[in-house]
Image (cartoon, rainbow, N blue to C red):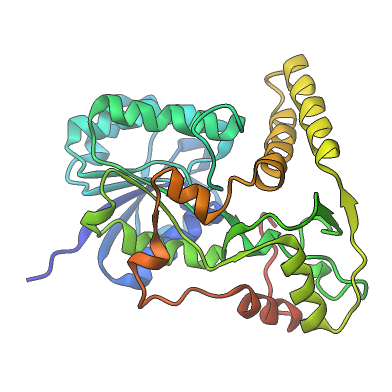
Amino acid sequence: MFSKKKVLLLGATGETGSSILNGLQESGDFDVEVLVRPASANKPSVQRLREQGIRIWSLELDDYNELVSALTGVDILISAIGPHDLLQQKKLLQAAKLAGVKRIVPCAFMTVGPPQGAMLLRDEKEEIYNAIKFLGVPYTVVDVGYWYQISYPTLPSGKVDYAQIVPVTAIHGDGAAPNILTDLRDVGRFVARIVLDDRTLNRYVYTSGDVLSENEIFRIAEEMSGEKLEPSRITNEDIETSVEQARAALAHDPHDPMKRIGIYLTQYEHSKYVRQDNSPEYAGYLGYLSAKKLYPDFKPKTFRDFFVEVLAGKGKKVYA
């Protein structure tokens, strides 16, 4: 008789966490419970989860004994915690080890990159991965490249403005750097496959719907919209200057979350377009498994599929 895996999900109301929750529910292979902090327990988004019949654990991440209680009997712990709170996962890891959790999926879900030195965000995530390895707990790290939802250009007509968080009007460097891209909605569907697969235990895995350069993305947008795009150009030197300015601003006020976001964004650009880290070739060099190759029967949305929806007014603004 088939037995569903019990999952405890942290960050279920965020963009990535919502996708993961949807993917787990769609698969039918999991019993999902959700961990939230007390400050979030009465938010409408959490109340909607309760109304679905999902068990909610309202706990502080430093409440070790209660965390052990919540994790007892859990097969898989998945964390989609926010970027400013990554290091708060350490007590959670210790509790998971004591509770006998069979697999931890820490908060990764970003572009492929080296383990240290290229991106502050990556450095802090890797600190958590190292803490997992120190504890000797089974794990899987899942990265997703960049979302389609933040990768398509603004059109002169304004037709896609409704679904963009910021205008996208520039190409970086020569525009030829290949980038791993995934539709946000497919993240959870991939995760549901990955966490049941023994081949992915103690491995890094990347998802992918398409691999496209900015030049290719802009050409697709022109072709599908019938509009002529005239992007501005941001040189590699401009990107490097932006990184240095963001680093200096953060050093001046290291506790300002907006300064951290500033360095995250500029280092994403540097990693993707100057270093060209977010590619299948570099992922293979780092030892990642490709989820697309692992699950050839699963057909993720292509960028064209996605952009058809956006042009039809069916896109959704992330972080709305």
